[in-house]
Image 1 (spheres, rainbow, N blue to C red):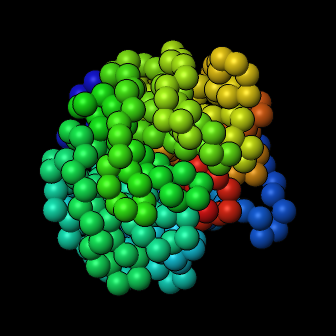
Image 2 (image 1 turned 90 degrees about the vertical axis):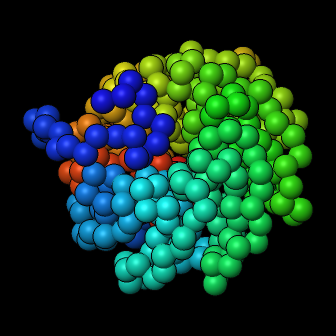
Length: 336
């Protein structure tokens, strides 16, 4: 297995032995408050749909080959899945949980995000160094923007006015004006930024530098770096709590989550929690943290205050959940 995986098609196709799962306490939510999770399973080429109240898989949806990125958009009623090995995006109707359309993509699609109002889809094309923009109603292309080398993660400001894309091989972040669909500037980051996260407060942008084992904290309004924080090995996914004061970073090669306090100056790593093996995607909702474990084929549910692991839900092979995989009203790592 490569030391750090940046692209779905670079991974081995094999079944991974699952650890023995301990019996863990359930975390009750009010009826109707629980989200639905759509987890991309790279190894089984499908999605696992998890009922957030029952914490059980209720459906499986076949998509393209080696799905990686996910953008659940409750505003459009759709979920969008990047399939790197098929060079396509699968469109899922959230009401029927069926594939409504398949969009061909020029290049290898990886990072994917929907605008807050649900009208636009942004797709990072890894091999062609472009950010593609589509309308979500009829999937027509709106723009194809030249960005940096090997674009990966995408994040949007809370109002959707600014789009950020991680240019992994240029070690920087592209800043795109959503009104003009033009690249306006770049922001320096660390070694190979892969995932991005924009806080719901609009104050911070986090760039996860997988080769640097650190996170660049950026002023999301002034577009300037504020701090660099050491985390675990190969930081890979990020989510925020509803206030934007805490961020949660998965460390792929450390089987851990770093909890970052953004409400102090300078920001600091406040805690580190153990989690599933090879954690990738992560999302926050209603006091729970959802962590996708690629090696264990599970989604681990943690109490977001204590870090206690509450439950593990078995999903498909080699799950990734790279993006907004929760259908909910919470922020960052979840659809809005």
